[in-house]
Amino acid sequence: MAESWASSDHSRRTMRANRGRDTKPELLIRRALHARGWRFRVGYRPLPQDRRRTVDIAFTRKRVIVLIDGCFWHGCSEHFIPPVANADYWRAKIRRNQERDVETNALLRAEGWTVLRVWEHESVDGAVAIIEGSLQGAISEG
Ligand SMILES: [Zn+2]
Image (cartoon, rainbow, N blue to C red; front, side, top):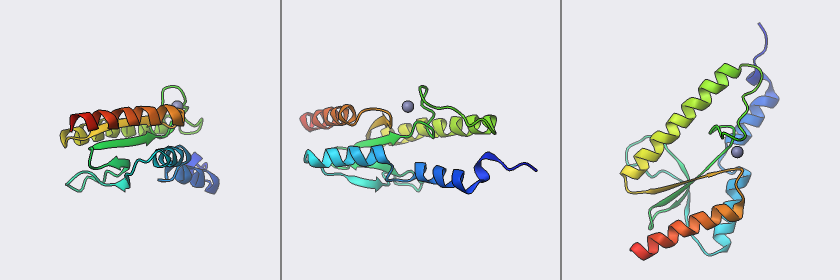
């Protein structure tokens, strides 16, 4: 039987690296927010029931959550290209991830969170501007 795309050690390592919490764009955004004086939780679990949702950045007092979505794992329309081998498998898998993202947004919003999703391909400055806009909106309301 032929070796599948994901079965080589190299591919597995790459996939794991891309999935981790400290992926580069997230780290850069966190660093920029921190430098501008914002404080937040990392790897926070905002849902009361165990739904296994962990969010990248949570401003718990202002109820703002930021999720930084990788272009591959979240199926960015500009950059997602399924691997040539097992393309159907990957398309289906990424579609399920996207459905889960929609569900996560709905669950979080139902709990009163503002949910911001940022693509990893977006500029750090642009992402920070969007996040700060949302946080400042939260201040004026409260
Ligand atoms: Zn992208």
